[in-house]
Length: 313
Image (tube, rainbow, N blue to C red):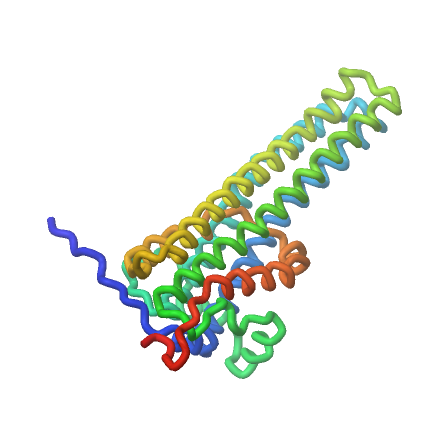
């Protein structure tokens, strides 16, 4: 059995990438992947809604109806099972579909060869259904601010432009993920302190607290802890990738090689497919500052050509 080596990848001019990322084909892929991620986050929201309802209702039930404490524990366990099976499967499936579409967008913009056939992605008909009529595309792009998705500068060589875009993607997500860890960590600690305080104020017995509060709320905190831990790990992975790419961009020895870009792209795909979802409200809240930081960092890594020369010469 013989295996063929992956094709060589030589990035084209950065100016062409700049044009391609605003082409209708690229913008349709961006709209499709964002809508797929949005649907995936809805499944996540259903899962977390049940967890939060149990976490809020269990202490109240334990205080008002102590005899119902065991029943609340059973309900919490059942929801944990549903959330970690059916709801988690639906979310992961849509995340994979969105990651495949985003990968297709990157390959088109960067002119990368298709080295692996990705399964689980949507068909062309699915994408057309997600995006809607072509005449509505410009309005959607303006509303969601999808133009100039990557900080590509025509002053850079093609390889450098791709590396800067990949680093920007990793660093941008790292900032979002770290903010998510902070929000969830603070919220979890605050809720724990509040539950203990209320239980002490109402004079709840230890047995009632364990059966009516701790036991039903435990699955919610288990899910929250796992989410925070996974998100923190994903942030570290993104930060490591961003630092790796930056070290090659700033190295004065030689140009970034095409095969390195393919390896980093594969790593980005795996991270997109497995990284925990970030709530849309937090993404929208932090987007202006994160985009400003992304463009500032990309500008610092841009290599300006000497006077009298043209980009990509």
